[in-house]
Image (cartoon, rainbow over all chains, first blue to last red; front, side):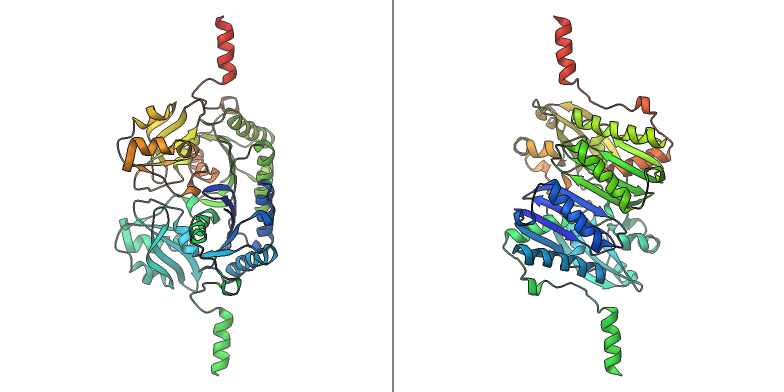
Length: 230
Length: 230
């Protein structure tokens, strides 16, 4: 089963192409502020390298968030476009589960953290073997509230872990583990591992129901609610 | 410190661009039989995305093997060319240490294995935290001889692990762990983590001494020796 997987849930963009349990290729760009432009370059580059047309894919996969509002929408919109054009089925997955899968079979539980701005993080706790297993479900909360959930050695990964590393160290001391820095970027290929299992179970998401997992209201929604309540 | 890292030691090719402890981007292609052509595309694509010219790099890094004879030479030749053109210093690293770093802070030791053909593997045993620590040094040997070195739970990764997975399972039973499939491709970014430490210690390799780690004689050398001994 050939799967094209897209993640733009943070300020990075990442695309992978896989065939069953074989990774054919992956492109990731950190700090990709123009990810709408680069994303299609990465997709077409990977397909070209594999001598594959979009019609040759069996499935499309995309991270649904939580993460950057704009980023998540760019990823979902791109995959919806490809799905409409090719008629291929789509599966979605959690961006935090994907990030946790950078550290499979780790000696401690993994805390994937995205910086959610406004003094908050998108975070969760996972144990990852062949697949991610959530210990604490994806949530948006203050770093202090998140750290209160941690009572055992934990590997902190992602841009939220980097942003709040001093607080994490001060709060948890030796319980806090920071992995090598190449694991801090979300990788579409880790999402593809999750997506493949979802697709094998036939759990595709109808396009009309392929929605972002925001976990909190957007700035625009908050402003609208304020206006409406006046 | 901006480092461009190249790996073509297997039949995959991988390039990463990093700045200190931040990964700016990475491209990997599995089964890249024409890696000499694609490699320069990946390098220029990553530099372009980061708006960086080769002169803006501080250091070049390359995997020295063990691995495919042609692949290792393509990687080293490419990096030597870039080093000659830009005058930037170069560091080398082990391809097996790089592959092991796909599983940092793992609950078991890691056995990175490349298929060396002729019934042999390039293999080693590492424990990886912030950096890889060799338990058994890089070697070329039969899969059976390698497995005789394994007496505790071990994570097997790489194309050699895939090729000999039945033998590994039959020999080791529950001691053998196979990680999610997205970890089986070598990643230049994992090499960059090693290379950065080497560069920080000032351990650059003069170009004239930047040689492949073959561990065994090439087909051509074996044929020559046979001819010479006649």
